[in-house]
Length: 507
Image (cartoon, rainbow, N blue to C red):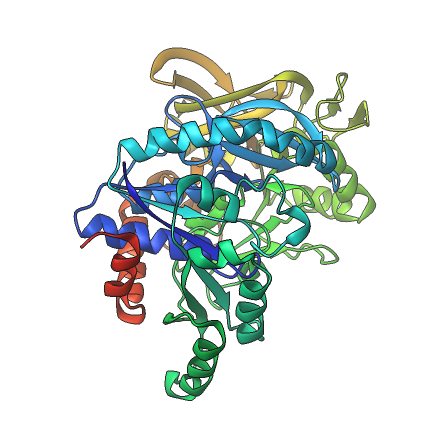
């Protein structure tokens, strides 16, 4: 059975995911078979495995860092919020049901055996498991039936390190308070703490570190500097959305940050292109004058469409389309671009139907079964209008959607899916208008193909009178792999890795 270590935090967004990712890469570099594990993830960013199972993207990133293919055993419970009070509960990669917070809290006790079994299976295949918690282990109202923090540490018999975020202030108080709110038995599992996101001279911090260690009787295992790495964020709390515009770049891309936005990681690849200015249009903001406007995926498409309508963004989108700017919809965004959306089974919303933006001649009906699959595809042989030279481009990605969309006169299919979960098929996907400036697709990850993305961007450059450029990043997967190596070097330089290995129980 594998050794283990569990990374908990004083709260959300303190850096648990990134520390877990870095530890996975360090252990992988040192020759260990290592895998990540998070029993319960609450996020709208999800991924489809090779087996067609849905799991949180944070554990996919960690699996990549560990040198492993993502498997649903790394994240057996995924909660996808659909409203402020309800979430879609996904167990072992498949939709279980929609549940309120109270319903799920009462149901958690029935999931304990499943979580333990899945963890044991993963542990039997690896040398080390790096577990991640959620939120804070000091949520004392949620201690009963806990499956993701100290409850999981007990189930897996894992030693614990606790991460605190100094950038937001109050790190000493948050670390001390978290530990003091644990029970005596829980405190015995904690072997040290990590201070994350530090800016400045560590020498100034040392007196505080000594006082904290005297108070909690635990070592500070290191101070991790605030470092900019292009590694996916776990969830929508990430601060980078509020400061994500690159200072230079001839091509302007804006992404609408919907209230129920999902899979915003579809657009991280644009950050690797120096000629791109990427901006997320947050609540209360207006759309600028972008070359490309992207409507991303959504967990509650109809309500997000109504948000666009009520906020005045719908008018701005239509005005932009009339200026012949490129409008792109991914998954829920694709559905929003159509003429109508119907939800007869109330799969996503209490609203039975509504008109879409009418920029694509399509209709969408939300079904009761979710489509979850990896795909390979090829763009249609004759893409109309300005994007004609993208015709026959090959792409890869994955689908996660409840809606089924049909095309009407005035729209053409965007691509043909050739493979689903490695089975040969021939299925039309997406739609593009006859002018070629508005298109949508169900395929997440379509922009991760650098050549496809660069060709699209170069079309815009020529329309603006600029010369083509080549991407400095030739392979997005290789680029991400290098970022994991950079993260590992940061952790090795800032953490007491000898002590961490001793905590794990390996050399």
